[in-house]
Length: 107
Image (cartoon, rainbow, N blue to C red):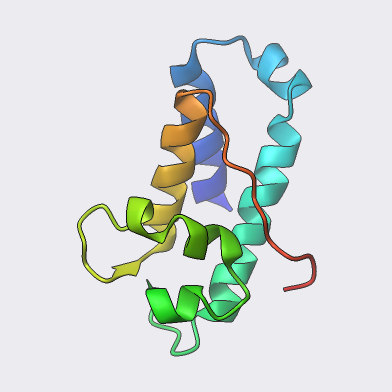
């Protein structure tokens, strides 16, 4: 939870927009989406090693991660961690390009 707050606060500060402006344009939705992505990450992480391989990401629980896997796996390690996912989201937020969290509710 602390990591999510850090991602959101950092993105807000780096974006140069007033916090009130960010909040009005969907900061709460971004936070909800990140929490849902984290939950889905845990569901897809079958071996509980804190890493998702492409195969795990494509398992159905994490379409957002599966769709952006190559961009998130910037080091071409063959897996992504929650830190990689959060960094990807943060990069897109600071560019003003919040990628939609296309996660299925309940996963």
